[in-house]
Length: 343
Image 1 (cartoon, rainbow, N blue to C red):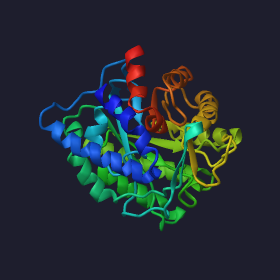
Image 2 (cartoon, helix red, strand yellow; image 1 turned 45 degrees about the vertical axis):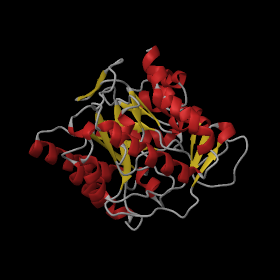
Image 3 (cartoon, rainbow, N blue to C red; image 1 turned 135 degrees about the vertical axis):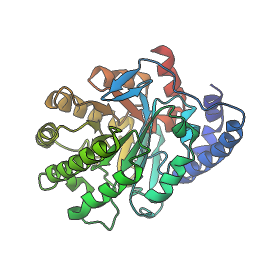
Image 4 (cartoon, rainbow, N blue to C red; image 1 turned 90 degrees about the horizontal axis):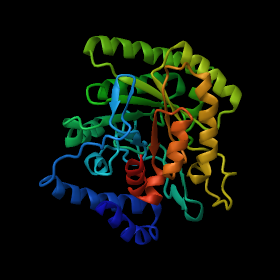
C-alpha cells in the first residue's frame, strides 16, 4: 500500500503539470526508485485472485494494464509492483516515430477523463525489444506480457500487414500475446483497417503467419484484435463474422472514442477520449459483441474502467480479463488493490 500512499501525496502536484510532462516525470522518478528496490527485493509475482485461463495462457488475476501507459516497455518491473496479472506495452511500430505535435494529452479532471492524440509515439520495435529484455519480471516469467502493435505513419493501408508482420516476428520469442491495433483514433486511416475492404485479408494473412510461427517455434503465441467503440451495431456484426470465420484468438473491447458527446464540458481538443465518459459506450459495445462472437473466442474488456464496480460489471458481461489505464491515472494503484482485496 506504500505505492498508493505515495501516489496520493504527489497527485495534487502532478495534476498541476502538463499531462504528458507529469506522466514522464513520475515514471522517471519511480523507475529510479525501482532500480534501488530491485537490488533488495524479489521480483513480485501477481497475486493469485480469481485466476483464469485465456486459451493457453494462465492469468494469476484478471486485472491487466492496457497499452498506452508504457509505450516503450521501460517500466515493466515498476508496474508489476501494482499487482497486475498482465501488462501490455505499446503501441509499438517497426520504426521509431515522434507521434503528433505537442500538446497532445489533456486531462478533464472534473469528469475523470483523458483526451489524447499521441499518434503512436514510440522508440521503434528494436529498442522496445531491448527494453523488454532488461525486465526481471519478463525474464522470470512472473506474469503475462502483451505487446500491442501498430503501423508507422508513413505506411499505406495496403502495406499494413507488412508492419504488423515485422512486429510479430520481432517480439515472437518474448511476448505472451499480441494485440493488432486497428482502432487508434489518432493515427490517420488506421480505423479503416476495420472495414470490409481490409479486415478479412489482414486477419487471414496474420492467421497464416501465426500458424507458421507456432509450428516452427512450438510456443503457441496468441493474437488479439483491438476494436473501436465508435462502430455501430451493423459494423460490429460484420466484423464478428470475419473474426468467427477466421477463428481469431480473442478481441479487446474497446479502444478510446472520437465522440466527445459524453463530456459535459468539452475542452475543445480533438483526440481519443478515455475514462469515465467512455464507460457506458465501451460496456454497451461489449454487450453487443459477446453474443455475436463464437463462444470460445475470449474478450478482454478495456475502456472507461474506473472502479472495482466497473471491473465486476465487465466480467459479469462476458469479459475474461479487464484492462485499466485512465483509472490508474486518477485512482492510482488503489483501483487494483481494492479489487484484488475484495474479490
